[in-house]
Length: 126
Image 1 (spheres, rainbow, N blue to C red):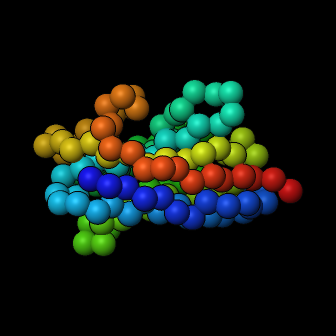
Image 2: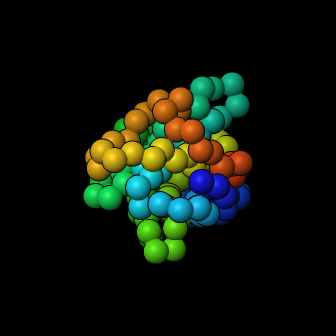
């Protein structure tokens, strides 16, 4: 599975942005898709994930109620809608995929995801 992210950029605090992760390859509905971010000097963290098949969503506490993840299996895309952005959201955001037959599986560990996109940069600054 090949993943390509888009939608990053510069946004002011309190603003909104939508990141997209477009997949190419077979079997997209069977993949859990996670969004990870890495800020300079910090470890990569999972901010959100949407499971395969049942589409259950998961969020880090730091983004809960501000970010929404949703998937379009027909279009093979997973979007991350980010609202009320804060400077601490500044990071390089990557999507990752894990093929799984467990419908509600969405690991937090990046090592569990074998497929990764190249990343897109988000900068939140006035």
